[in-house]
Image 1 (spheres, rainbow, N blue to C red):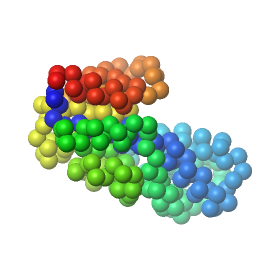
Image 2: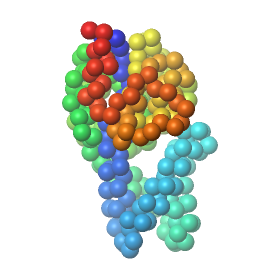
Image 3: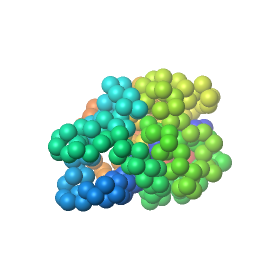
Image 4: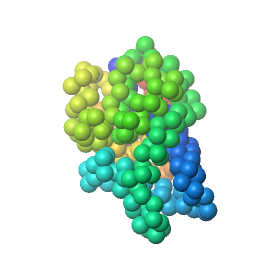
Length: 229
């Protein structure tokens, strides 16, 4: 094996976050009787949510504030008199139940389990990620789970990776696999470990961030990890 440690991102790499997030959003606002033009309403939320997570990665907002602020911005934009403090915990509860996995996710984790060290490295919220991991069937494969909210620094911050390698001593033979060019790939590259961009949508990379490897199907990871065998 060329790598002794694989760091797997969670959402968008192993978990189908889009499906989990959509389900949580629809159930939340159905509960609060907001059903009219819900698809358009959801698209507006997604845009705000994407921007606010970017702010989180850049350390412009805390995870605690993020939980409520995205809804505050949405309701302000749409001129709705809903209470974001009331909406947020309901949404997070539904989101924590979103255990949908991407195709091939459990198979690839199971394949590497026992062959090398594997760990989860996510920027998600602790009270959302732990239930999803535990109830998805992946928990039995991961002895190490690194969540930015607990660490105190998000990917791509160098301190996030320093925390990991204080626990695991495989820095010179490690690779991070993730779908986010900024948090996963830039973060790993800046720290000096190899990276694998999971580009399932075969998007054109115009970011200037260059991964060590690029795959569009998780099964391709086997060739990368085993290429020296």
